[in-house]
Image 1 (cartoon, rainbow, N blue to C red):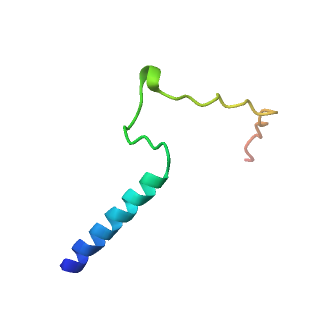
Image 2 (image 1 turned 180 degrees about the vertical axis):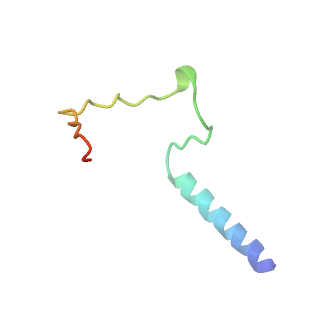
Image 3 (image 1 turned 135 degrees about the vertical axis):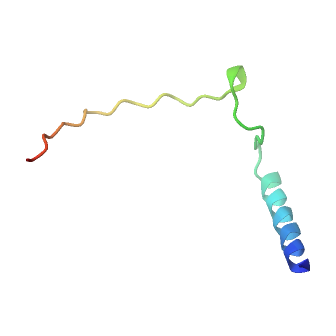
Length: 56
């Protein structure tokens, strides 16, 4: 049982170390409204896919 507790503590310490070295990491969840960061809209494809009739 003590091995499980030791593994949990080691994993938690590693996770906190990685998160602290990651820079600006927001753990606040989903954002809505003015604080939301939006990416650029997707660019349209160069040509639309051609519909192929199904073989019968």
